[in-house]
Structure formats: structure tokens, C-alpha cells
Length: 376
Image 1 (cartoon, helix red, strand yellow):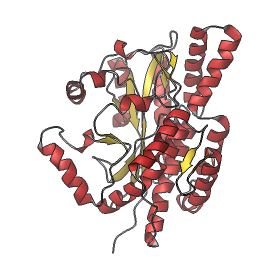
Image 2 (cartoon, rainbow, N blue to C red; image 1 turned 135 degrees about the vertical axis):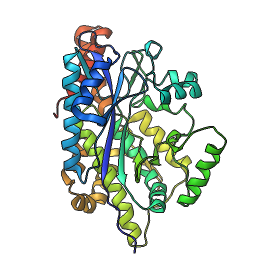
Image 3 (cartoon, rainbow, N blue to C red; image 1 turned 90 degrees about the vertical axis):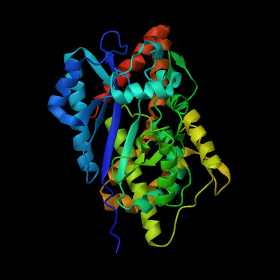
């Protein structure tokens, strides 16, 4: 008899480092990394660019454990960076930085990426947030992945934090995806029928020598290459820790809800990637401000209605997983706006009072520094 999934969770975040005076990106000195490792061990590592660091929680049984570990990790990065006159940003794009000024980390994995991806890799001045949920059965992982894809635009809409690129308002809520989607093997996952089909497809590419392993597959949602988990990768970084935890709780609840339906011989309808892709674009462009398409109704529905439906749908799962407060905290994201909305409000307020684009952008970056430590 098959055992139930553990629904454990793990969270990975990538942070950008800025100088506290200039507010511009700076490279992490080796001593800073050494100091972080001394405090939190292997839960911190360098990222593709030298101005980035990555952290990852341990395997957490519930959202309470995730909060405790993430708070410890964020506090460490904040405090160590402060010793060096730096500050971390949990944001997907630095508002004013130029990718041409950044350098990649001299590490075999990243040297290979730079070679394989050529000019596309050089523009990768972006950061993201990934959530792992423990699904030990391989075929179940694939079955839930097919159904879960429907909700990826909802998660993106709430997480958007990258409206600016090289000092310009892009008009998008998540510019990060426009950069990331230039890479191969990205975007919505394909609709696969079994773990065997997934393995055969991946192995076909590996056998050609094009990639070394499945870690080079960067879909918005994928079976993890390292852990027995389903890994959600669609989200922008959230400057506020509590917003990260809310998104992680929703992801955990969605996974359990789909499993719960399966236990009753029910399932979420699997829609064509073309249709989900349209909602993905709407989330990328508008965030939570213009709604998403409800395919059952055949019309665009305001995000407020979709969120209330989602909270109701997941209430039983949140109760079982012990994350009711985190699920309901999604209403605060809706009320305050996602990070892109908040950044634009800060810019508009400062520009109205000073008339200076430079001061307005500095105010935005300053607000991101403050939000990083707001929940610590």
C-alpha cells in the first residue's frame, strides 16, 4: 500500500548585494562568504553572479519550521553583509543596475553555463525563489505537476518584484521572466503522463551531450534533480519574508489539495499550455491588478475573486498542514500590492516631492533594504 506524501517543504532564495552608500551592486568578497558559511554552513552558497548569494532552508515539516529557519538565514546574511558596508535585497531585479557591469562566479558549473548559454547568460542579472514540497512517489510527482501548472500564474502574480530594468520602468510586473525565458528548457512544464516518460525525454537530451543532467532543465515547475520533491520555480523573489512564507504555504496547500482530490478519484482539469501561458503573460505584465482568465467562466476575473476562491479551496489543506494564517495572509499582499506595486508607489511619491529620477530610484532601493529585515 502506497504511503502518503510527506508534504515537507524547503525554500531557496537568491539575494543581491548592494553597497549601503551607493546602493549599487557589489561583489561578495570571499571573506563575507566564509563568515556566512561559519554561521550557517552549507545553507549558503555563491550564485552565478558575484553580486549574488543563495540560501536554502533545511527540510521543514511545516511552515513554522520554515519560518524559523528562513529567519535565521536571512538574519545571518543581513548581519554579515552589514559588517562589510553592504545590504541584501530579496528582489528579482536591481532597479538600476546594468548587467554589462557584472561578473560571473569562477566555478566549474557557472563557467560551463556561461560557455553553453553564451550571450544569453550574460544578461542573467535576475534572482528567484524556489519552493520544494516532498512528494516521494515519482509517478505522483508527475501527475500532480500536470495539474499544478494551472496555478502557476496565480503564484507569479502575487510574487512579482521586478518592474525596473537598468533604470527604466518596463511596464511589466515581472521583467525577470523576460530574461529567464531566453534560456533553453524554461517556461511551463510539458504535460507528461508518467515518470517513465519524463525520464526518457530527459535522457534523450542527456545522451546527446547537450546537458549533463536534469538540473539543466529550468521549467517553472519540475521534479527536483536532487530531492524527492516537486519544485516550484515560477516566483519572483519577495522582499518581505512573510510574503515568501505565504507563497510557500500556498504551494504546499495546492500540492496537498491535488493529492486529496486524487484520493477521491477526482482531479483538477489539465488545460493546454497555450491557455495557461496566456494567464502567465497576464501575471507577468499586470501582476494582481488586471485579473486572470477563468477558463471555466470564459472571462477575465479580478484577482480578488480568484484569491478568495483559492483560500476557500485550500482551507481544509491549510488546516491539516498548520498554515491557515499564512494562507489568509495572501489577502495582505492583495491589499498592499505585490512588490512591483509597492516599488512604483515609492518611486511616484519620491519623484513627486523631489522631481529627481535618481532620488526616486534610490528611494525604491532603500525601501527594498528596509523590507528585507522588516520581519526579522
